[in-house]
Length: 524
Image 1 (spheres, rainbow, N blue to C red):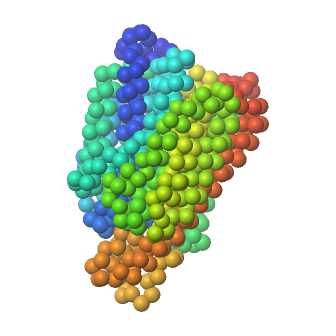
Image 2 (cartoon, helix red, strand yellow):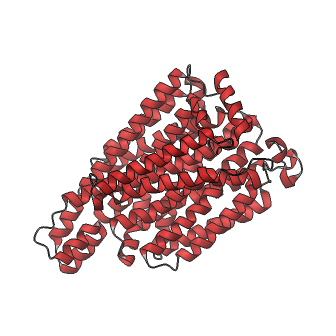
Image 3 (tube, rainbow, N blue to C red):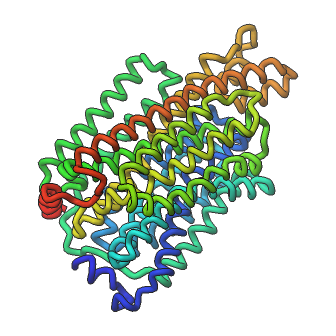
C-alpha cells in the first residue's frame, strides 16, 4: 500500500481526514514525549534529596529515557510503518501512561532509571509516528506549514514541560511530574483513537533485527562510558576502552547496513548533502539544548536557590523567542535561501551558551536572560530548515525514513548532550570542590552531588562547604556550556559547507540524490 492510499486509513477517503484535528493530536503526542525529556530536570533536587541519588545517578535518571528513545527509534519507526502508525501511537501512549504511573511509586534511583528506560521504549514508538503521520496524511501544499508547527512544538514543548512541572512541584513532590505525563498521554491516546487515520506499508520487508541490536549496543556502551567517565577518570582504560568499543560497534552497524538488502537506515542516503546537513544540525542543536536544560535547572535551584516554579519560569523567555522564530524561519528561507537563517540560528545558539557560561554564584538574572534570548531564537531559526532539509531531500517513498532520521537526530543529540555536558559538569564539580579536612563520610557525600553537599552542609552548619560546592558547580557549568557552544559552532560550519557544496540554498533533492533515494527506496 502506498502512502497516499494508506493515509486514508479508517476514514475511508482523503476528504474525510480532519487535518486540523490530526495536527493537534499528533503535536500533543509529540509534546508528551518531548517534554518528558526535559520536565524531570526541574525535579532533580527533590529526587536527589529523597532518593539520595548521586550526580552520576541523576544523569542516568534523565538520560536513560533519551538513550533508549534514540537507540530504538529506527526499529520502532520501521515497525510503525509496517504495522500501522496509528497502532504505534496507541500502543506507545498506553505504555507511556502505564510506566509513568509505576514511576510515581518508586523510591530507589535504580528503579527510577529502569522505569525511565521503559518510558524511552514507549516514546520511540510515538515520536516517529507523529511526523510520518503528518507527512503521509497532509497534501504537499499544506505539509510545509504543518512541519513548521511540528518543529515549533518539538522545540518549545521541552521548556513548556519544565514550566508545567515547576507549577505542579509547588503543590506536591517530584512524583507529580509523572502524574502530569499520565494525563497528557491519556488525552493524546483518546485523541489518536478518535481523529488519527491509519497509515501503513504492510508490504514492507522483514525487520532488520541485527541492525537494531547493533544500534542499541553501540549507543549504550558509548553513552555509558561518557556518563561514568568522571567516576573512573576520562583517561582511564575503562572509559577510553568503552568509548572506542561503542564507536567500533556503530561502525559495524554502518558496515552491516551497507550490505543488508533491507537496512533500517541506508548510509548511502547521507550522500545527499542537504539531508546530511539537516541530520548533523539537528543532532548538534539538541546536543546543546538538552545538555543545557540538564545543567541550568540544577544551577537555578541549587546555586541560586530558586523554587522549582521560579526556575522553570526563568527559562521561559527561551521558549518565547523560539516559537516565533520557528514560524518565521520558512519566510526567511523563502526570501534569503535556507542556508543563511539556518547558519545564523546555529551561531546564535553558540552565542547564547557563551553568555550563559559566564554564570557564577552571584550572577543576576539579566545575564541569564541575555543568554536565553539568542539561544531560543537560534534554536527556532535552525530547527525548521534543518527538519525541512531532511524531509524534502528525499522522495515521497522515503518520507518514513526521513521522519525516523529526523527524530533519531533529536534524541541522539539529546542523549549525547546530557551525557557529555552532564559529565563535563560532574568532572568540573569534582575537580574544583575543596573537601580537604572534612570527615570521610561528609567528603564522600559532598563529592557525590551539589544537592548532597547542600544537605550535609545545612545539617552540620558548615556554610563554607555549601559555598565551596556552589563555586565548584559554577566551574563545572562553565566547562559544560563552552562544550555545548563548541558543538553549535561545529554545526554552523558544517551546514555552511554542506549547503554551499549542494549548489546553493535549496534543500530539495538533486538528480544524483534522487538516484540515491530510488536505490535506497528499493531497500527500505
